[in-house]
Length: 250
Image (tube, rainbow, N blue to C red; front, side, top):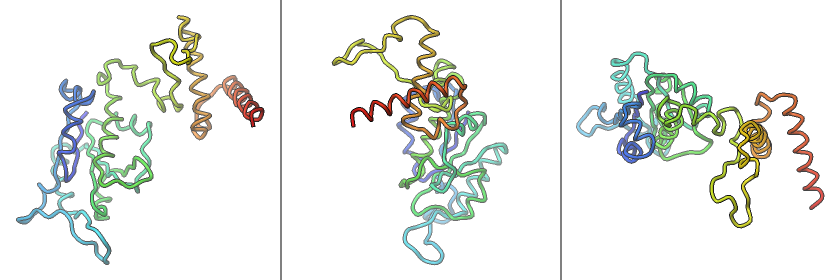
């Protein structure tokens, strides 16, 4: 997998490329990261990449020309590259998008700055993505989020090919509760089922706990999840029991 990040501040990625699982994957050759500074494709003595908006208004807008030249350069080397503009106006980035993008060979992530980008840049990319309904100072943080989420799905990056399969959202549900030593901490005990050695019972417990946790924290996900009738009935019973307990203490 190759990532190309287009940004005005390529140095932002120095630390993440030097540390963490991501950095190790780069060292092993599992991932490759290029950073392109828009200024390298700007003309003139001062390599200006932004200008005031037509029609007036505050702030500056990233110009279309340097971005278009940068994209032309990348596409001349790899015509099959997939380009993504990072913007709060984009489609919300979800786990299924990470899975979809992990099948690509080369992703280009365009980071905005200032008041945004010239509208015509949107016509030059394959899609627009957003990591949330809020505004950042630039797209660099969003680029790193997408790079991290996608790279975890590349074989070998996590060490075990199945490491990501039980994580939150991978199966459409939040992850089940996790515990490690000590067995008891300040009166809080690890569930006995996890100490039983019965892997079938543990798997069943984890699945049910994932269902219950998702129903309590993200009910919107449960409505989209593929559940058996038995699971739906069990979940309904558990939620009713919770409601009864709340009513008794109210």
